[in-house]
Image (cartoon, rainbow, N blue to C red; front, side, top):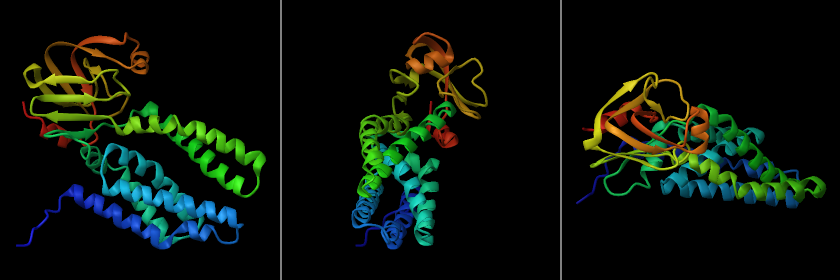
Length: 283
């Protein structure tokens, strides 16, 4: 008897990204960039190209928060490579991968890949104050590692070696910072809800259903404690039956101008797929 696999939106969006990523390999922009350069530089282009392509392929086949971080970091590099090599097929595949990789459904699919049991995870929106520092940190890391290795291969040692050293130092710190953004989610479990967000919170919030009065959709934090990290637009406001202790991260405490430990009776969060998250919560 044939077994039919139901095509869900999550499966479809990962499948689309995989197809787009295969297009990049067919056109292989790093191969084009390897022409008319010295052999050492060509080798570096080839090694970086296939290594990053393989890493992303594995990430797509094994959904997880770590996979989300890898795809978000590598897809922009593929776009630059496709553009620099004037490789239309690769550029198209890279752009599709970039757009889909930063979509809400794709993010939820990846973080759900690391869920346990009956958990349903919904990724949280990136705080606006964190966007620019994240892009800058990513750019410096990529520029130092890729640029440094290419310049060193081209025997530009005076600039290349220091860049490689800087890149190696950043590689021990920046990826952890970037990965923290992929590990921010609202978790819905049979017993209640959990807010896992070590960017905004020092400790996870666990709110049993019995302690939740109601959850509504609002446009502003209002009188709720704003645990979105600083986003604009709609959010979920969670009203508790009694005040609960919440421990904030140092950066959140500074932004809110308060202490690191609060007793709150209402707080707001901002899932990327807000309506889907609200529908999944039953009280």
